[in-house]
Image 1 (cartoon, rainbow, N blue to C red):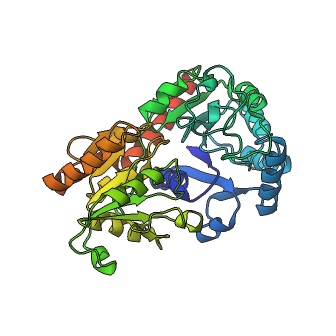
Image 2 (cartoon, helix red, strand yellow; image 1 turned 120 degrees about the vertical axis):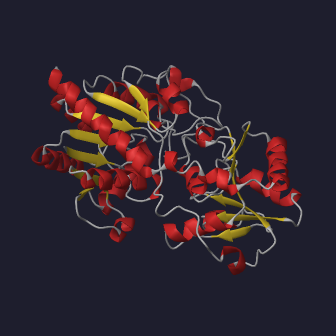
Image 3 (cartoon, one colour; image 1 turned 120 degrees about the horizontal axis):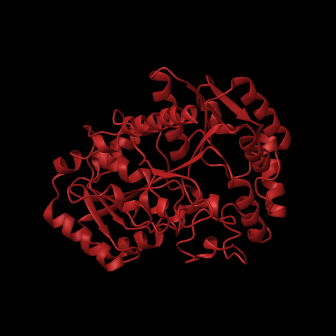
Length: 404
């Protein structure tokens, strides 16, 4: 098979998933290119079988124009046409879409091309952006306009931010562009998101759930000196990991926990950048960033409980990274967060139920949860398992298309 994957970035959770699929596809004898926008982070990655869509200047111009006009994904025409010419030369059997936001590819050109060529397309939805007028999440806003037609958006200044509310026009535009593809299959990382898709204007497409996975060679139990390094010996360490701490990720709840928990406990947050540093409670230990994934895995393995009071999410990779390292997880039932949790690896409480979340922390501390039970779940959350399902889906789609 000849496969092209398209994503907004090469790093982060969606970038890792894309690269893991690429690696597995190549190992099993397939050609697989990845295509992303160009930014400064791409310098750290190999350039083999990696195609750039546009350049840094084009991306910045697209972002500025979209911010001013609200016409998201409406620019980068030359960059997209150039990329389409490359696709024509490569002649892929499968085009696998991931995140098409924010503002690096022309949506109209891309989807008109897919409709014209009728190439087998797989679209993994990592959030809800594909069927809303702009926002990737709407749980905090408690908005259901996406079921009929978005308008008068209360979140238009959030990611992906706009100077004006263009949600109604963008909803109509997406509906026109994204509907009507002959060979489109949608994949969601959670059953929760699958149910939402089936209520949206994308319901015409077959939808499958393939849960995300992690590299078990990296995320695993390991001897480490994490507690010694940060002078946390004798503490019950509650770890949170995010790459954008704020209200969505439950920072206010974690700050409240820091106020209430006694000296037996210590909260550690990884991924706290400069923007969030002054919003974090003084009793919380902040780790700005880790040098690599292995260092992050050591932090998971050296902690006692992973806490994830996220208020908007799909199927967070951090939950399964923690489980892979033998760390039990406590999370809200937000989105698909609880789909990877069972009695042997953690606990799920009702979204935004602070009292139950706090009570669960004390209960898990007092019961001294056996980490060996957590490790029984490792194989089902492996990236190999995830990649096998994706490649099997590609093969099945191509086999069925030949029968037609």
